[in-house]
Length: 386
Image 1 (tube, rainbow, N blue to C red):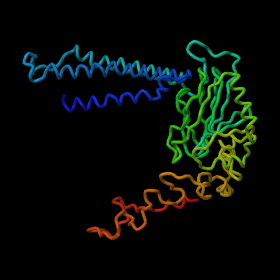
Image 2 (cartoon, rainbow, N blue to C red):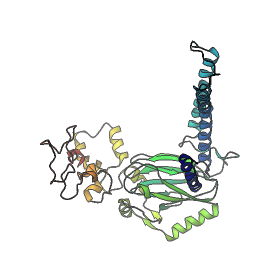
Image 3 (tube, helix red, strand yellow):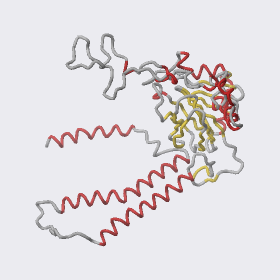
């Protein structure tokens, strides 16, 4: 047996590892995620109608007209075939039209802002059903969930009743993140000062994974939570447990929770300060900060004139963790003025990474600069350090 064949056989056992792959994206349990899966399958199938024949014909032509096949017709003067032109252009055109129609329809049908019209493919949405509202806040690096109708809040744990619409309102307290429960629906971005929405429903009881799908710093890989799909009685019991075991999420408690931390355990809050989610959304949870709604009202009224310079400190949001020394580790920290991790050299090393005992040949006087003229380790501009 040839060495190449032995290598191929050695790779066969590795295919068994694929059995442990989580295929939840292709086997979801929420109607929105199911329809998104069907869209992926339909789009892939339409594209394969072109790709597979092209690959097959390429292999066939290479074999049919190989140099050793002297029986193949050799016609060096051939240059055109109307029949081939019709097939070559008409087939992709039909596929593109079909994909365009499918995309247009699904873009409107699966709009995350659009309220649900059904529970699944066989059940329309009951007229008397009351959705569950969940207000989602992405923190560094954990998730905070408010249930305004139930009056509770949780950290890194989410629950909802089966076959009941869920209305998510999503924002972030700092950097952009992405809220994603693959079994439920597609990912939706969470951004500071903005509110995005997602309407979804879970159709099968179970515990599902949720996480951030957008890199947001050193704690990103541990920014996970559990989503529990429960029957009505199970959800009521879960709410009762949160109220029994939870504490109060005051404004001061939230400011402590907001500080960057990793692998935060599940926390329950039996109640929260009135309007706390609104304050987070308007970026004024920190005392003394101006709410965005107030700022927009000032702008709508024509501005505050020369007196507006008094509002400068009230409008600075992004550097409070850096100023207080509580900023989480990340690849770079430009607003703090501290050098990036890659710029910190081991003790005794020169800024260019060379041992000082080794003298480079032809070293330029400005060795601390790169070829673009930028100096390594230059602090951030002054306006970023306010």
